[in-house]
Length: 113
Length: 114
Image 1: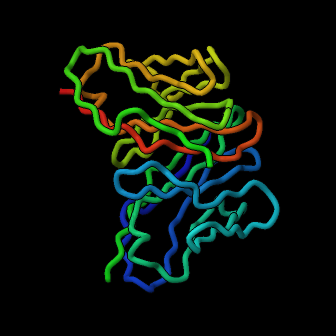
Image 2 (image 1 turned 90 degrees about the horizontal axis):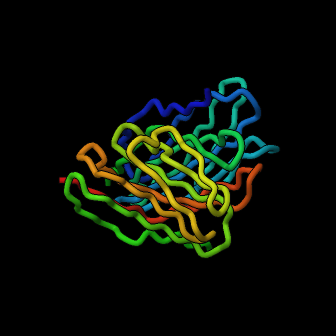
């Protein structure tokens, strides 16, 4: 069965530091992979997505993610975190037809000034 | 931009009440979804619909039903609300079956059942 694991429930970084959020997936075929961000009290906003091709994907707000098939991973990165990046981040995998997505449990990011 | 609108941001209902959560999208998307979000559990799919009057169960359909009479509107119904249905409910829509373009989400409805 398809699944997504985000090993880190909470991460705290200092403003200006680099960030990497981990995501591992389980899926039998070539996965479609997504990262979403949720600010407090809001819905989810798409940061980036991977369908095929270049394994390094650029997204909005300066985020990027790298698909590594051998590690079943799709980690999200940002070279320099801003205080406004404090939010919850969700990794998701496309689960077959009808565009269903399976989400990880999320990683809550706190940013210290 | 596609907009997905959930009619209520906050709802408080009593145990046993019938509850309707409404979701409307304005870009002619075929697929619509209802998820619930709970701390530490991420988003779990309740029901989805790929066409008018068509619906499919997700991972946690028990205690819920849905209605899609028009393409733009997808309603989630709690037949008899219980306290364990206190949660954040998120509606989403997407464009096309067979390819994963990603969802557009509404802002969510935080439901409290007392």
